[in-house]
Length: 242
View 1: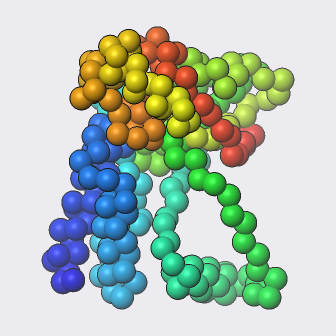
View 2: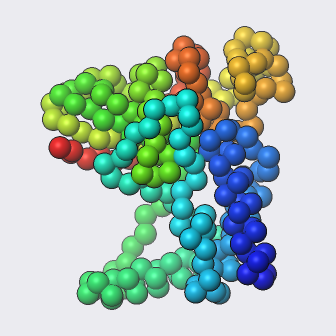
């Protein structure tokens, strides 16, 4: 791949990512998009001095749509990078070792352990509680600024509106649809019982996958639509805030 081809591929992958994350429009499959991103990764590993500042490996997809109020995250919300084989895992481990060496941190490679866990594929969410009350909820957006979707989050039964902790607490997690709820939703859209993409019914307005359905649901201006789609939530972190 030439450098010009690399830059064009970066531009196209970013366009496709934003179409998915901001407009729930999946013009190619997730596997095909991962393959394109992998080609970018391979070029960057061979040409580290030519990495574009817009590389999808160093930026987070998405932004804030005009119809939603912006929310500035107190801590940046990050994204995961993919690896495809053992060699890439070993390369990552070496980069981690190099970083530790640079920072003066001593690592014992003989004691290195890995933890594997399922990845819930949905929409990253930051939820703030203040004095036990759900105060705000925002999407990841570009990592620094997200979309304020508090009223929609309050429609998800798995997320409590009140908690016992009385300080200020930020909870981060993933909003998603189970496979069963995704299938039930698409059947209801096909049958004309619930609105799908663009607020319309019929098979042509069903969702391509659960991730897009969850993302599209949280971007609804009508919170009653959110309430009818049975979204789920799993928390993976919590932080005390000022």
